[in-house]
Length: 625
Ligand code: FEO
Ligand code: CA
Ligand code: CA
Ligand code: CA
Image 1 (cartoon, protein in one colour):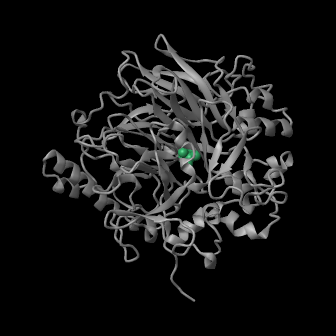
Image 2 (spheres, rainbow, N blue to C red):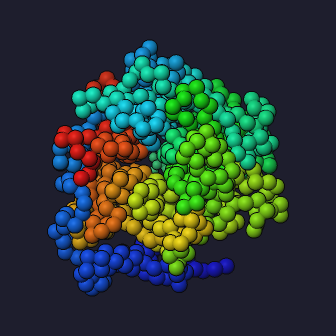
Image 3 (cartoon, helix red, strand yellow):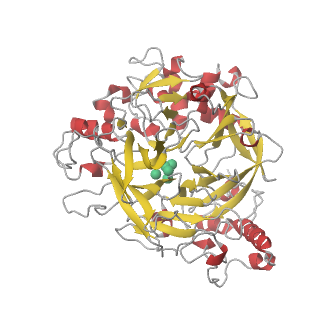
């Protein structure tokens, strides 16, 4: 019996910044120093000595002249209000949970909730937003469809209706999930909801049927009593982030789908699969009492019908949303779409759990800008890859193709459908790099570089570090930059290079040029504006660092590269999700999810209400400039 005791927490912390025999990865300080040297070399100054001296260091005065950003940053803080940086910005609370979406929808009444009312109202916990201009082709910026995910519900939404029966609450919860499509127009510099638009739509797991498409559609492991063919599913769950396609559709991701199912599993052959995704006997929601499909004893394969990316055509309210199984099944956070140099469609997506992987899908077919109908099933055929980050700064994309490498019958896969249903296990076998929770992914439109938020991973031990995830006990997260290789097909190529773009947490606060509130923690959703600036929304900064969650912005190139600046502070308890710009860059939409206090109404008889906010400038200029 070994007498070696496991390292104490303190010892593990000390090991964070030293290269141990267990790991070949460089330390946090090494990488931070390297980043600083690169930036200062770019500026033409001798910075190696400076980098070597960090930390500790006397905070330098922020050199805001080096950045393209034109606002004065907010201080850190924590209170019940939403704050935006100085510079003539205005924040309009546009859509709150319960706001009517249709002309005949009932007004929000937190004491008399019902599924029927909720189906006509804005859902709970808004997340991803996409602004889709109207008309569909060549639309002006003053009119558009706002597409918004409703990720999950919490019991606090019933704090003003304690007498509701469990059955009614369950119906309201189901109806408050899913997605909203709603028409907006701008009048007198303010946005308004067009409640009588024929394009408005609520999508929910209560009553919206979806089609399963791609290699896993129809597979026996997707069949249930309600769907003996395995081709149609009622609804979508836990829609977190998403993406938009060049052909005008919206992709919404099913993230923490596992938490809806429970009970005693009736089919032991699914045991290992369900375990790998966290599907177990205990359900967080308890919906099975009224909706037996969430009971693993009744429908052991129902969870296999979730964890996909759903494609929605927001311009056609009668269209049937499609779950695109070719993009794999995992806790999808985002689905960021671009094109390779060869015209093939590439979708980047992360699996948001500690030690899970980054993926990309590359279509077989090429995008056809002239004939939109030719693009409608592009996401059904192609190759899904997972990422292996190597120490030499290369990322290798490993194909998840049935019959190739370890993805064979010997390892329990009998078809491409099974590789996709068990995407995580397939990626394990391929040797993908375990990451610190891949969340938002943004693409810089000019440079073509990709930014990946790794929100945090306190569970990473020193010996589990790798060069792309170099911090043990990573409580504050970091952001990676992926650079398509020159001379290749770009995003569709099998290799790229990567760098660490920024670290979260207080320890980076003394970087020269970073303002006192420029450091962030726990990056989650990301967006790039048309000048390739990165906008970083955070989730969990309060528990990690004692500051409110918020939104930070920074350049991705030039002397202001990675010098993040604090732009918006969320009310206490809330995270910021789904930042999205209008094409003219004059409005920034974002969601305030799970606010505390009683934001935004500040009414003693109203619960806090998650809401979408529109940020504009009084002078009408572009955001951030
Ligand atoms: Fe729903 Fe990964 O946050
Ligand atoms: Ca998220
Ligand atoms: Ca998160
Ligand atoms: Ca979240």
